[in-house]
Length: 317
Image (cartoon, rainbow, N blue to C red; front, side, top):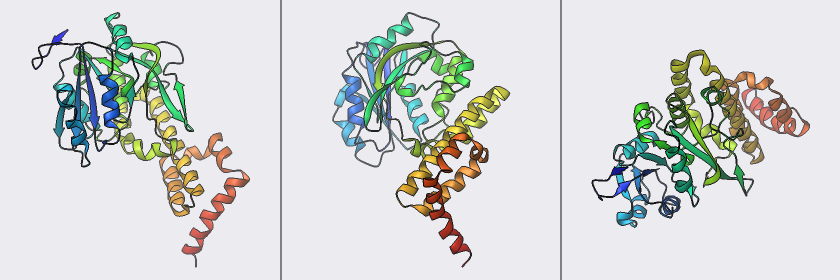
């Protein structure tokens, strides 16, 4: 255990919460961390240049949390700033729009203590699908992944699920700060961490994760895709092809879903441009059975004609 110079108490876990303009949700995240029945936790909230009333919300917690205010540098820089001041043996990550369920630390930390070779532990989670809260399994095999399984992109591990050994985080260099937005920074760190040792899986839903709608995925995570591809290709060479292919396919699914949603909302011009992005990003996606089944049916062909014909008419008056 580590002794905090500020409090003189033992710190097992440093919980790091990055927040940018998260005033509507960050209190819920902090409360879920404070309510953990676990001795030896410190909570570090990094206000990453918020322009809303996030600072005011954080001030209400007084000495119950440590707050870092910094210029906006992105989620990776915010998490790293929190880790730089952490005293814990382990680092736990909690995003400002997610929450932990009771028992999160009580169940996950022992998984690491019982396996000194394990570099991080993760759990199942709750998420919302079509307005319903459902349990999602992070490990279909019921165990931690080996490296090949991670680079196959067969595992969904997000920061809110993870408690990580501090020494391994430091050895990996923390979150890559080339990622100034969400997306790519966490799977890249998990790949690096898996080089140092195994992951432990806790088969309980211990967090609620705000999973973005597939139609919003490309806009939220797409901008970092090129950075992620470059980093994994440089480090893993040909082995990186699988995870790059998977990432591109998922973004393409998101662009298709976004285009169809825009059609539903009557945003035909936007939908036409989104289809253009899809074709430019991954043209071979047009040959996928998924794309064909979604587009080439009577209903969606009628939708597409309502987009393409006005565009052609404007170009050829």
